[in-house]
Image (tube, rainbow, N blue to C red; front, side):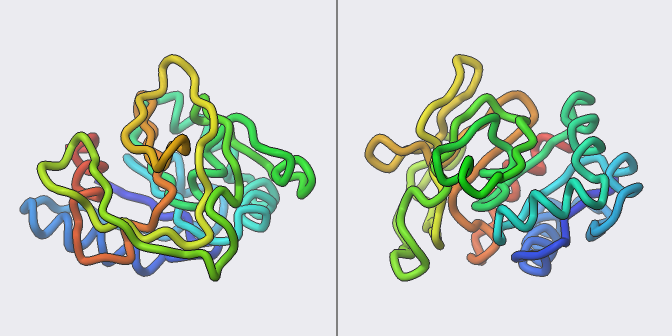
Amino acid sequence: MLIGVIAIQGDVSEHVESLERALAERGEEAEIVTIKHKGTVPECDALIFPGGESTTLGKLLIREGIGDEIQEMKNAGKPIMGTCAGMILISKSGDEQVAKTHQHLLGLMDTTVNRNAFGRQRDSFEMELDLPFLDSPYNAVFIRAPGIVDAGADVKVLARIDDMIVAAEQSNVLAFAFHPELTLDTRVHQYFLDKLF
C-alpha cells in the first residue's frame, strides 16, 4: 500500500506522523510518500491534501500537472482526504473570495465552499465536535478555516457548526475544515484508513 501526502506546502510532516501513528495503532503497514511533482499520484492507493494557502496550492497543482492525476484517482475510487485548504481544493465551486483570487478547484466533491468561513488567523479556535463515525467527541482545531455552504444530494454531512458544514463525505472523498493532524487523536485518520484496508 502506498499513501500519498501532497507536499507542496502546509502541514505535510504532521499528516505523515499522524498516518504513521494510525497505522501502528491498527497493526497495518503502508509506505507514506510526499508528493511535489507529477508522476507519483497514479502509484498511490490513497491521498491526503493538507492545509496551507489554497490559492498557492491550486496554482502549483496545475503547474506541476498533479491536478489531472488526482481527478483520475478519484474516478478510480481511491480514498482522498482534504483538510482545511484541502477542503477548498476538493470542492466543485466557491464563494466570491474563491472567484476573486481565481482559486483553482478540483471539483472532487459536489460542494460549494466559503474560503474564510470562520474569519482570519486570529479567529482560530478549538472545539469538541461530534462526528457520526466516532463514539465520543473529537477536539477539532480550526485555523483560518473554510466551511461548506452548500452540498449536493450525494454528499453526506458529517458535522456542522451552526449552518456551516465542517465535515463531509462523498463516495471515496472526505473533507474536513479542521486540522486532524494537529492533535494526537488519530481517529479521523483511522476513518480515512478504514477506506483503504
